Amino acid sequence: MDQASGLRGEGMGSHAENRRIHLPRVISITSGKGGVGKTNVSANMAYIMATRFGLRVLVLDADLGLGNMDVLFNIRPKYTLQDVLMGDRSLPEILVRGPGGILILPAASGVEEMTSLSRDQNLRLLEEFENLSSDLDVLLIDTGAGISENVLTFNLASRETIVVVTPEPTSRTDAFALMKVLFRRQADKPFLFLANMVRDRQEGVALFDLVSRVADSYLPGLSLSFAGHLPADPSLTQAVRAQKAIAEMLPGAPFSKGMEGVVRSLLSRPPKSGGEGGIGLWMKRLAGAGLETP
Ligand SMILES: Nc1ncnc2c1ncn2[C@@H]1O[C@H](COP(=O)(O)OP(=O)(O)OP(=O)(O)O)[C@@H](O)[C@H]1O
Ligand SMILES: [Mg+2]
Image 1 (cartoon, helix red, strand yellow):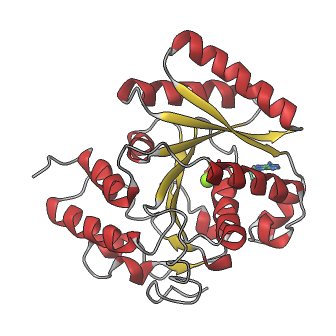
Image 2 (cartoon, rainbow, N blue to C red; image 1 turned 30 degrees about the vertical axis):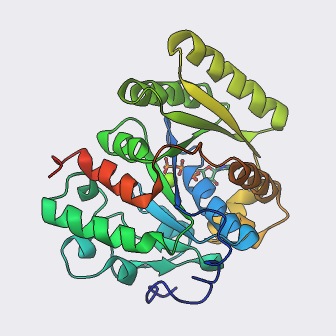
């Protein structure tokens, strides 16, 4: 896969006339416990948004651990965010075009610095992200797991946060712990609950009810809504091994179908208007963690 040469390539810009979303939606995909499906959710959500709904999507791999998105999509980017922070490349120059025309921002190296930029780096990156905004409908951020400062910052900066939870008890309790920390820092932050690796919708809803009840008792006022469920699907392993998004390789698989439903419902419920949104504000909030405003 080639490093994308600018944003105006094939498939980009063609939706400018009939855009359904004016400010890009900024959605972080997160979890308390690791290994619950965030990267597969991010990749397939991006693919479905792009191919079935015609949206222009950028995925930011914000997991500091071993590369995720690049392995999943079998891409070897020449440049990363680090090159942008050093001033050697512009943001559009480092973007990689993935399947379905989605854009991937290779950030495994450089992403940690995003939350502690110098003023110059911050202003440059802010400008670059703002320039990118008009060419995007959605920015999806695949975060790391847990409650490290970096994960918290990416989630607090994003207007919408999807918490991926599986039926494993530790996934539930760790999701609760993560939401607790975020809620303490930003009480009006809404959370979207995505049940993964469940048998059926009923199990997904039961999982949601369980976590909601605990949240109601211990964190009154926390806003948590059900974003849908994704079935445990053995064929996902095949796609992961083939280094492809399952929605591309096996569009009829239960996970792919489930994801289509999740995306449809997400798109039918845009975040409440009134508050500011978009990438510019996201970037300001992100950098605000490590910077005093001028
Ligand atoms: N619905 C599902 N059905 C079957 N297997 C799944 C499902 N969701 C995720 N998996 C499997 O779980 C494993 C972890 O998935 P993934 O890498 O997406 O998780 P992650 O939350 O991004 O992990 P990490 O925290 O390490 O970044 C993968 O092997 C994936 O195939
Ligand atoms: Mg991951």
